[in-house]
Length: 241
Ligand code: TMP
Ligand code: ASP
Image (spheres, rainbow, N blue to C red):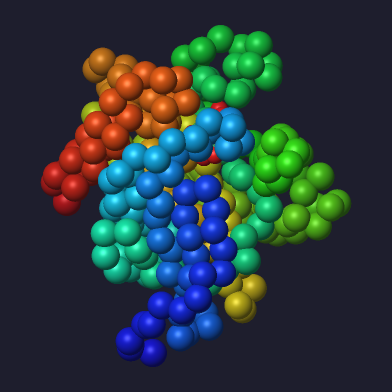
């Protein structure tokens, strides 16, 4: 199908809206200017945020395409929208950590900024009412959120994405501290990396200054939030390819 026509809205989340299209296998993802943190308790609108996350996430998915990672992204349509494969999102947030910070320090009482000997992959049950609790693979299998085969594939893709993104961000003087991925199944049941990969869903630290270049600037009231997103976009889009 060549010409894609935007249909009715099918979902509105905290940072994006999804629309039907004239192709039942395709969805249009529109990025919003909203910031939320702490399970939606803290909110703000910042004009230009949706555009930056759309540009950054599109650039990252295009990079992952070149490396053969199966994902939902098809193309960026304009400043705010992308075309993607329609998927049923698994109710799991897959977090990969290279350096300790954030919730792992609070949960386990470990120090901040410790480099882990190997990437740590964690699963969280995606449920706002429960505050996205951490779960084990056994929970995911027993409650039907993913099969054992899905989880093997998810873990191997997550570790590969970590390697690929670590290299990408190293090249622009940014440390990939941790990030969150989501996965979905397309109409034929194929597992695809989905959702977004942006400063909302990753922690990025400047290699030399340690400056936070991600949503922690909003979470922790560090100021110049959009400046950090702009900086990530400037470095990503200006890199030698
Ligand atoms: P955490 O340290 O708060 O668990 O966050 C780990 C990573 O996951 C970090 O890069 C931010 C990202 N993340 C999301 O994308 N969405 C969320 O709802 C949360 C809590 C974290
Ligand atoms: N994504 C979550 C929220 O919007 C939490 C976070 O990113 O800190 O509330």
